[in-house]
Image 1: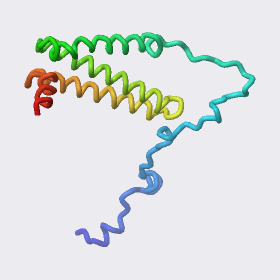
Image 2: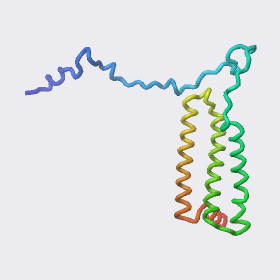
Image 3: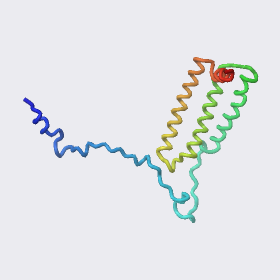
Length: 162
């Protein structure tokens, strides 16, 4: 027969195998700390030659070109339903998608400028992943908006009439 005294006196963990100290969970948050930078980001001395980063077409001229092509393509699409009076779902869906990609590129530029990878490390990657997740959720929102209601232009028209 068990008594409360016998249950309390029995050790749950056998000594030598595990101790209470080894069961503690202490997460390592060191990868989320800001990476310390030298003053002026001078790594060696001021007399050392500058080593430029490896070129990347996406982060360079192609990235800039994609942003400008999207911006220019949005101009006739935004004017079509209001000036020409043509309300077609394909025009509405293409404008909504281009607007989403335009916003994605703008927020990505803000992340690159204000959360640089060399300073914030893991936070940069987390911000990019949150932005990508938000973009996919917004793409689903565009799909729902186009299939259940008359799209973005109809929403703007209803807001304008109020």
